[in-house]
Image 1 (cartoon, rainbow over the protein chains, first blue to last red):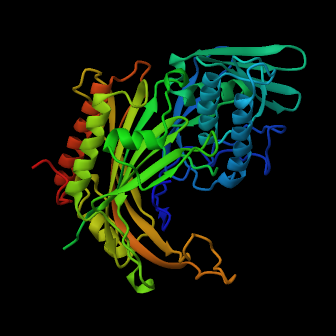
Image 2: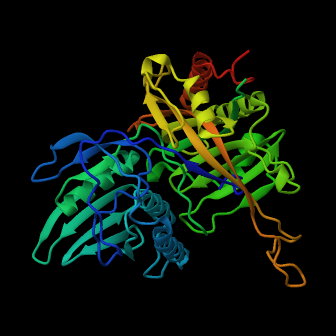
Image 3: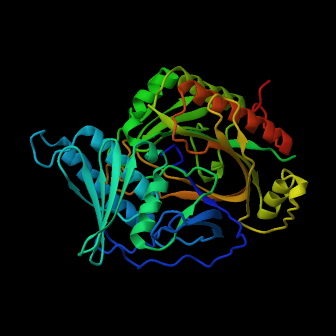
Length: 213
Length: 269
């Protein structure tokens, strides 16, 4: 958004030695209704250390390895379009009258926008959204018959993973634990998908995510 | 003589948690830091988009953008009017002393008051470029500023990127662990210009389409410096934010001297 409108940067890169192959590709088209969970390679345009987080019965297993990908598998334009709609929906339910059943409180709106922007940055497909009273909003993804519900209130977040038969797992995060939301979101992704998820630990901070109004 | 100049700089704050984030508008932030009206302001059109304010400060274009999960202060060169494709060039900050002063203004403002609520992480980056006729020249420039002990040998390879991180522990009260990243690379730059009629419309009053984009490609050697604190559960106080940034700027100044970049004005004199 800074005044770089007259310049386009194409950053060069060097291919580092890799101990693993190219990450598994997701389905060609993904939506909240068809959540492939293989989307974390978007924007991996630079060599990076990745941390593999595997969540099985317990939450202890962590392996560090290296990987590399320079080819985006999901274009940013596809993603940001869905997130634009999510942003509009968030604003609309916040601006509703207080007594409207869909109204959410402004602090919830701030928290939901914060989490949504992190989801976008991490290339999660845009979720469905519905509310749960004025004190929280719920982001939802489904994969087959399974569902992931992310309940966001002003000061905490809860992930609930369910199958048609039962609640498979529930994970709660306090406000402090959301200081680095990517860790929470990656662990949720790993728990939901039931397989290791690669977390990029580049040592540098990301560029701001751009989304058009 | 290879001339290195600063291309851009950015100072970033990451909030401690959604609950502690007090999003102000880019307009308010611009006022808080520079005490004047910006030249341009874009309000937050979408809840997931930033609000943004920018203005000219001497030879710099400064701006601040407030995203849902981060605040950025941006510095770049103030772009001169472009007259014809022959004048298209890579614009760089000609006076790094102005940049240094601008960065210190931001640090001081952050130290005075909590502009972003509770902050858990800070980051700053400065990119330095030397425009070159080709990749061989760019690689030669890079080779001149990479420490010999890395043993890198470059010829006419394209799209080079080499990055190292030498973390340090801050001497400030937070004792934050700081990543200190140096990145060398050959950059392809494409400068495009668009001619817009008065009013900003892409069609004139007669309905004719305005002149299409003109572009020129450039090759440049690039060295980027970035310092950032690892995410903390505890928040970083306003005073420590300023100190961390000052410490980080000191690292950049020292580092660029060690590498032999010698960017005029980018050091404490």
